[in-house]
Length: 280
Image 1: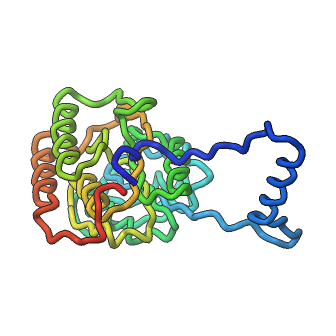
Image 2: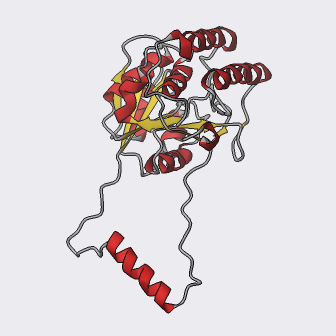
Image 3: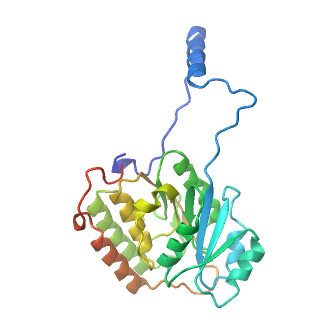
């Protein structure tokens, strides 16, 4: 897939109905050969299972809003607790008794996500924040692209249908600078970089080769996905204001960490593999 295909899902056109009877019969015969009729005892192919990883630290007041909107397509919810001092863990269990609770092994959002990814059992892994800034109802859009051949799907606030009601001017500027550098280094055409609403096939977790401990993990995931030649799609996403509490993100210091990650992961910093491309 070329970088120009990045934002375009596969399109399947229905067959024409303008042909005459003989053409219609020929098509029907061909369809039967390609898709034989199912027997009554045949079972449909199993759908992919989905794990949702939610890192949280002192998000007790936001957890109910997030958890009550998780769609039925999610099979497993993993709450990664960052040593919360409030009732985050108890609130999660009260809202969703089936939630799996794991404690991260070290500080930082990156460590929390890596802990959650290793605990996930689903075919697909979705990651999202616990502060209410991301809408769980958008998850099926991410899964649609995974179901149709993509390996890594990321939300974008800056394509048609997306937006942000929370981003500050300095965060927008920083995101744009880092995004431009990423697109030039990897010959890609991404529209958003520093946004942590993503989904990917768990079978590619080793290819993502994640080591970051902080907010820069989102950039590490995207650069490693590009470097590994994974099929990437972007879907529109609306970022809402944090519902309660204060963010743990520090725009300047975390922006520097993202930049260091981007520079250290640039293509010529590692020995290239002949089987790896940019986005297709």
